Length: 245
Image: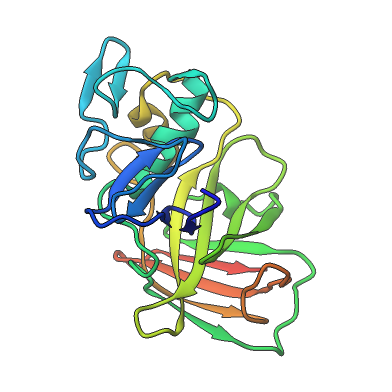
């Protein structure tokens, strides 16, 4: 991976083939079809990431695999929940590239100041981070191609998490996209994504997908930037999440 450029859920290690979805320490779409060492391409099509039925649930590989980086045979329950369920369920439906899905408008406003307490407000969404008595925890991560702002309820070992990935659109302007995931330090469902996701988002109700929105930042994202600002994210059904950080 040290020879690749990457973002939160995509990487480019060269090659001339079709994008490949592969998993190791996490799951990434590899542009050009060349997956980094330690990542194993999944056998399932991207739109059906759990196509293999096993005795104890669903699995993205035709047989058990041993990931070179860890030397451990998977799945352990935690690994399945933390890596496969979260990542494949979230990104498996379509290819993720450096510029795909960058549908959030990003502006830079140097006059923005950090609030006394980061806050999240929901309109039409039942997210734990919007609970009044829960403090919002914000974390910034930098990749070679993008920067990521992660939001979750602080002090809890479970709940939900929103990741805002900031980069450039096809026109070269700052833009962003949002990924929603569960956030848990315990996984007791074996190879069963559906049970946990139904508990978290409601039966038959998938994790929220934010079709549009605006993000205002105090400065341009970089590895050393202390970012604060606001983000207003909307789903296709007009549910809204507003973040102040």
